[in-house]
Length: 401
Image (cartoon, rainbow, N blue to C red):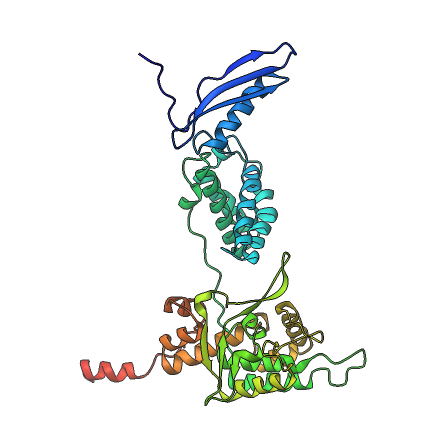
């Protein structure tokens, strides 16, 4: 009977011989996943190094053997191997650089300080749950939710690398959701805010007056279309058509900022499926015409350009709005505006709520670009406190007076 054949993906017995030079030579045979036989060899000053090198050569030929991680490795070790894979996906375009940077920041600032030294075989469901609950208690709901997502991805990587039997994060208790913001703006508040913007620092003596016009135009376009701030700043001359009745704009890009790419226009909205054409109400159309009058004649020219011709960044627009709110805080509070919830997102929420109350959730969801109406209801629609009085008429008709 012949010697048993080496199974595909496995390494045969390693033979070691000491050479006249004093070095060690290790030899072995292996079969790759196709079944082809390979003769391997390595020499080294130390016997164990020669054996290890032969093992490494065998692993390079097959998907069998062991991954880079072992159960005794730590969470920090897993992060070190996991992040380059995520970066590769960003480079190939399967996810955005901003997503990669979000993962990297959470791993570096939240995960590693909390549990970077924990061995993977000690990372039980209970321990993961306690880690996340501690982050929730000491940090914030948002940081805890980001940490849960990151830790689950890290453990998933360790599972695929055969260093963990299962992903323990999947069985931790559900974290609370971030409290829903309820503030919207009334027509009176919008009119007054516009006046405050027009008069903002009109007599300023310590430098040039802030670009209040860009605040007004951005507000009116966002209120009239319910698009996000990045999508608003990403509008170009070629994205609007003022010859139709009513005029329209196409939402097909957004301004993003990453360490790797800087400030640039991404050629799709937040999600590619959210490309859509929106009819402009009069207020938004007037704002678009003002931006067109200021924009370069190039069809690709940004409607919200800096002096150098580049697109205005989201952070610069939001910084300008925060400066206005800080200066006019007393007037805004007197007006009944919740200044703690006053960000550019309030414009999107206001438009969605007005459309939902007038025409229903389906139209509001389509305006926002959502594929799921529940997302619209959970995150954007502010429910009216007063139930439609028609319910009384219905019950009277059924039950009698």
